[in-house]
Image (cartoon, rainbow, N blue to C red; front, top):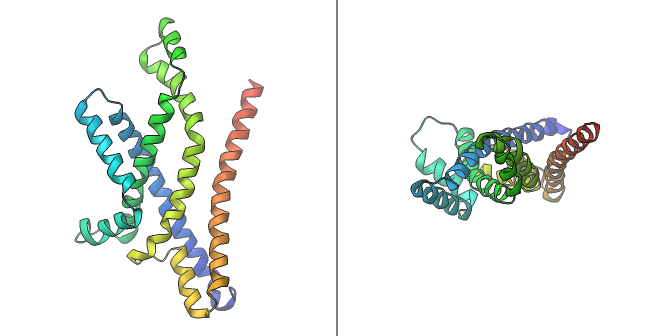
Length: 216
């Protein structure tokens, strides 16, 4: 069934669109999340309150509604295409989650080591880069990994704005072949494959880091 009429090519193309939008949304979400985290920890009450409001609104809003608001409302008259609008919507939504996981990870680091480094003459920036940040990255890693998988799953609503992603391709072939169960199983397998690929990459990174630590 998947070979007939090169259906598998359409499915792979839809999968590629899903991965592309997820990847760029993740980059945007990570960078914006780091900025929001800095604002959340700022000494400025205005920046802290802005960050809190941003996180509260974006985390509390369904990503599908945010996507529709961006596409049919905020950017309806803009020259941006649907994929770019989707990247913005998913990226800004992801930023709220990344900001919170970064803040929680930074708060969970050992403050005693930072104080000891400061007494040894380390600058505040050096202590952050060499002591706080490495610890925070280790703490945040599992949650960040889950955030990536969740982001990929969230993109299943891209069809709402006429983007032919994996889910939309699967739905189209389900209607065309009149065999929805089979096509849905194919879709689930492909999403699982991408999720396990992400988990595998994180596992390889952990193995490599541990190997380097033991060699040192």
